[in-house]
Length: 143
Image (tube, rainbow, N blue to C red):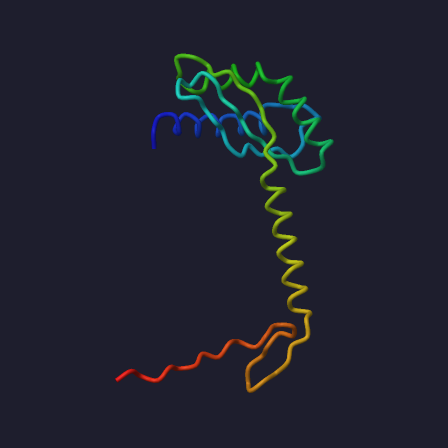
């Protein structure tokens, strides 16, 4: 684990603590800092966050975080011993919503597959609509 990753992890931890404990903005929803991308020179940090709620909650939370940007940057600079305090920008991270949507689609497919009628044949259960497997013929051995 290189220095860039360690600093990014420390920034993620500190920003999370600052958002949950120090910011008292009513526009903040249930915010989770998901990851931090840091440039190799440690000057710029993109902080990705997710919010439990709808698009309106994302907008309000983004506004609250952008208005508290200077405060958060100052506290991060005080708590993490770096030569320069990184410029911070907040970005929405909707990957968790995307994964929930994919899981719902997979569950629907599974329910549809289970609801199809099946035929019991020779001790084996075969789904309706699937063709018979091809039988392989053995060729006679060459002498």
